[in-house]
Length: 395
Image (cartoon, rainbow, N blue to C red; front, side, top):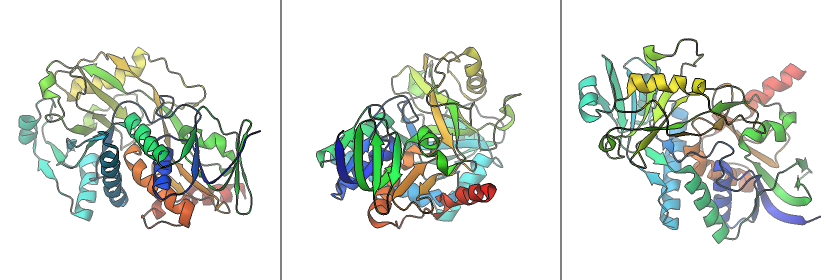
């Protein structure tokens, strides 16, 4: 039985785990990564060609400092690697002036005095003819936003970590984690790894790996699609910022949508299609038995929104993908150590709006693993908010 030793074991080498390995390697901290697939795979939540990044954050002002630092770190990785990871083509948040998308985004803008433009319906139609605009709709334009290439970002972070001496065991499923007073033992088949600390960033498998924590996580099925466009020149990155759109009165009858559900999309990267999807919790899913067959019923909702919100976009996709969200009840992340488990750092519940933060979450995880604390403002993401409730219900 192979027996390994290291300072930090990183379990799950997707968005967060790859960034954690990169940050540990930059500090010269010995670390080993464990990945059940091959890094950059399409079996979880970190694939699909593009992810939005923005700092005018409608999910809450608490995320703004983290978003700012995340962009700094993405730029640093891009510079040191020479690999293009980000396209800063701006972002549009669209909706009625009183909609949640507009009012929540403005709260973050006011809290941090973020640069932005507020466009009325006439300005919006003139600048972005690919968008259909209802009477009274406005848009917030954030210049310093855009999209990241997730698969490329993961592989680039790991390439940098590898360059600095970090090792990753691919196609290696971790069966269990055993805690000692000041050590962690990771068991993965016939591999045993002893470490001072473990960072657990397994995405949709978090509840299965650590069921004893009873974290209130929902894993749901998501279907982004790539839809043909009629006039590619209207959808290039310089003409078509990434966008998030409040559904307003266009919410589909019979579909249960949360108040923060949005229709979102990206510019064309191939000159033929654009990627669009609905941000909401989908049907419950098992990561080990995910239904990857896409039906006409699966696509009906997006087709409605394409027809309502976009000009010159076909409602018949050229291709689709199936991925998963892993969300907490409040849709905020889980970051930190469970009570009595200082040897573990948990990174979870990121799906839907987390990828952009993976660079800074890697830095946070490295801080916690090495120093037991971080200067980043993460108190609102503590596991305690759910574990206290879980303990009370058991007692």
